[in-house]
Image 1 (cartoon, rainbow, N blue to C red):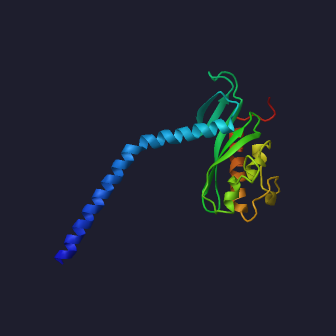
Image 2 (cartoon, rainbow, N blue to C red):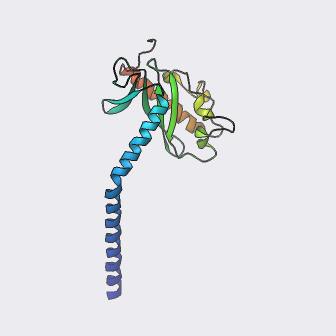
Length: 192
């Protein structure tokens, strides 16, 4: 009985030491991780709003979206908007950063997080040999964000063979977020 108690105390001491080490590591690296995340987001935003000289975030009802301006001082009307669209795929929540014109047309997009099935759902980010960008994402370009849908739902986006759930999650999340921006009066269809 004494051996069991002694082993329990030793195991408890190891657990406390490991917890303290993990906590210390987290505290030492959390600022660096936050800076790295911010840099990755800035790069992704400049990828979906390439003409913007200044990108600022804005929030409505706790939801963040981004406005891109043609000038460094962010004056005048935005030249584009970006928003993160999240949709539940087959094996993960897929996060897509979508760049939209002021009229709600998709001009760029970037899947910034996915853990879909390799060889199936991951085809959403696949760049085919000889091409420069993902073939699946290219289908969304120049389409109104509030009307995108996969072909199996009567839309114009060709589904990924064997991974309709992933394709549907991406399309429906983009549609939902574009409709939200439209409902908030951010996107004004038919304006130039």
